[in-house]
Length: 112
Image (cartoon, rainbow, N blue to C red; front, side):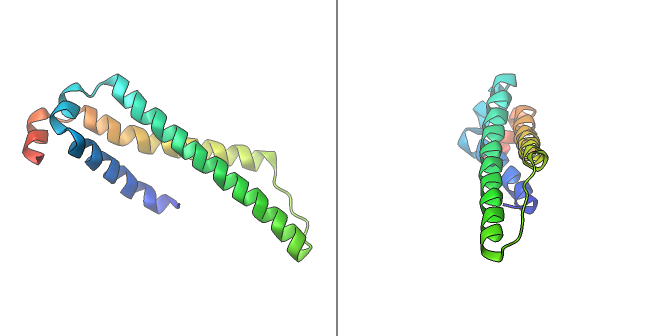
């Protein structure tokens, strides 16, 4: 998944939050719920980062075997990839949760 898909996912997450229970979400969405959404986003994006690193390492090994090239995957690149995927999860998880927590209940009821 590229970075181009993330804003779409963020918008879909915000709409899902509003669709599930808009009045409750707008009135009771607090720090705890924002933290839950943030934790879920970070875990999912980190799992995606781990899978991406594994695919990259396996791909580099396959190229090394099939093409006879010498490939090297540095630990710095792996750490940077995992940190970046976690940072993406933090930003795109926090943003819709924060927006939902700061919605006006009247506006949410009008949305329905």
